[in-house]
Image (cartoon, rainbow, N blue to C red; front, top):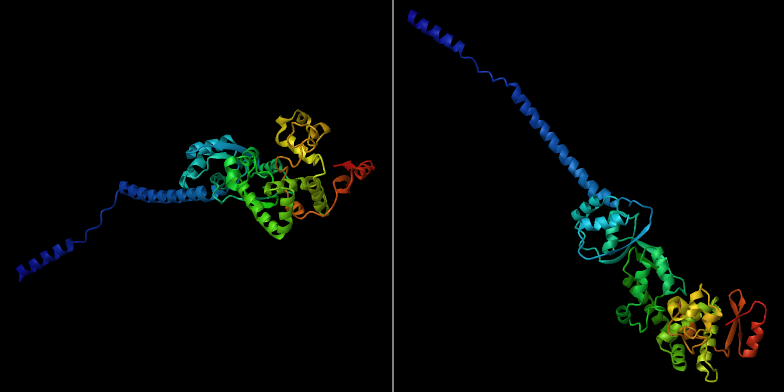
Length: 391
């Protein structure tokens, strides 16, 4: 028993000595490493959030922000193949972009500048980057402006208004209006589009292509001409036959009526005066004697007549009787070489359906109205009345 008891005591002692092992206590370096990993994780997450916010700002907020100016226009001519940086620098030089590097980065991230249309552009310094690029691309996403052209506006008047509304540079529109390839494509057999740019109200994109604006106005002319010529087909056929006029001649006469008439009810009467002079074989010489026609010669071709050197918007006697002025209907018989303005529907209709009169003369009486006469003697009496002004 003694021996066995000793064995039991030794076994019990060994059992008491076998205690569970404690986990090793980490030293300071392991604590620091763990904290560093946590911190790096938080920093990475913060950086990802910051990058996301920066991208949101760059792609959403920045392109919608207003430009650096207050709406001042800037003209520029862009060539094909510009990089985003080159375009941004050009825009910065023009004063329409304040941070060119940022604009270039945004442009690259959103597809680049490959769709920018080369050529003349008219932009403003208040446009947002997104609006600015839409205008330069002429993609149909640009904002529009409502432009109204009154009846009797010339292409020069229209060019000024288009530039004022930031639609097209003045020079670009005037150049397009005499582009022979464009005129031929539009079926205009003339030196310019004058007369065929229908005066109306249009919604046009900012920084439009000049040729597209002219195409749109010509389409409106074609639509109106079709309606009027259908409703006045008999009268139009008679006028074209008796006065030997083609469509261009009708439009030219309508443009003179537009510039001479001030009240609607006199338009067909004024048209009859000019047609009577043109159709009556006994009326010689066939001078239409229209002041606005002589004025247009100095507006469109000032270099052709020395008398135009003093032109200030109104025809003088020298301008009216200058044989070098191709639009002088005092020295040249019949219609001038082409329309002198863009007539509206009422003046076109007045030529298609003129009044049936024997008038050959008229003189202004004030208030936009005229006195009409059948004979030169009656006309002279009307001219010498106070306030009268001869036509």
